[in-house]
Length: 305
Image (cartoon, rainbow, N blue to C red):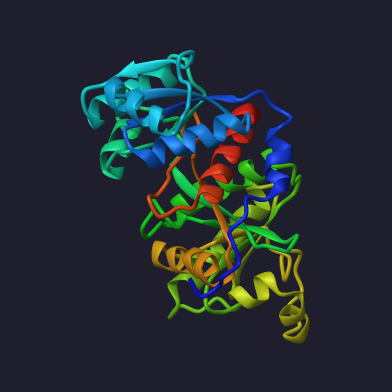
């Protein structure tokens, strides 16, 4: 870590989530200390009502290590991670939970159950991932999308990414979020494919997206810095004020969010959108604050559906 400032879960998220009842959340294969600790912290903060899925014996032992009394918590036994994934997805399909959190399970196994055509959680909209980023001692927040699921999104996928992230920001109380479609330039340049797609998305949004301001192509500085936009005389509703940054590919998004985490101590609250319930896709490297923030957003989105 280049920054030594501790990562903090933004109070604003916790305050919004506190307006709702805890989301019934399936912890998929809750058989690691990190998964159980995440569920414990979120339950203690009244963000979720955890439904623990996995090997009952391991779950009970881990709860004991955490000094967590789970006598009154619902546990669904599953022999392995695949069984845990499909059992959790079925709980969501049948309305028994309204959010899902990844536990001790390989991401591909986890996502395979979610996107299963027969038994999954598809809605007709493309799944995408969003990181809600907050930095200590700053009121400015922004969402980076997609940095985890869609590797090289085409035009139609980027439309879904925009819709998903705009819906999330609406749930967070931002009535008309400003969406910057990122590239390396503000000009449409055939030699830079992302700039061409960004311009196409801007034209599409004018006709199809009334609930957000969408503009691209935009370089990062002009999307987030009012001063940079002023100096370069860039005038549009998004310039310097972006709430959502739509990245051209997963490499850009991955590098951007990790730079903010490791250089600026940003809290990265990550969530998968576009399924029938919000999905918290945690990493073993996530600090407790980020996991708590992710579950706060999942609760907010679950209650806004």
